[in-house]
Length: 246
Image (cartoon, rainbow, N blue to C red; front, top):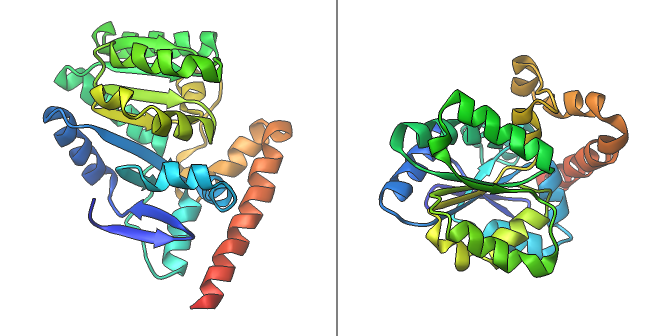
């Protein structure tokens, strides 16, 4: 994949949302396989100490910057990205594409009630013809191979995996041979929670100013404070350290 930049030991593709969707559509239409991943500040921090996660991310076919902080860092470090390509927005666009072009989707992850609500909402918004299958995100390491095979046999062209990092990245990386039948695979983090209505998304102005993390923190302070406050501080320090090397 051309047009890549490298910051903080992380490879990122410098594509807009429109360009990303065009690449994915071409791969699906030509029945090729594309392994996609997004990176945000927290994931880049985690990658510095997790070699397996770093490998799982950097060896993906298409890597987008999900977090506005990553776009900011790219500018500070002299490799400016065109724009943020938020995972949840990309997922929403791809569901619409699936409906328009007759693609089928497998949904993997989240709790069973949340997952069922996601499938129900998308079926009502579009059609249940887009649903190839679904399974919740609670399973053992020993079950992973069978689940990957179930997904491969479902006839899905698209796979969304809503499981926390680094589990989802490693699942997709470790079973990429089995999942090669699926044209496009993507980790979507907590997106199912938003689509189901369990979690509200930040207003547009907070998304555009890089404050979406703060909105999430205010909704779930006990669960999110460590991830965002400590993680974001570590990320800023990483950027400063890298900038001082220049």
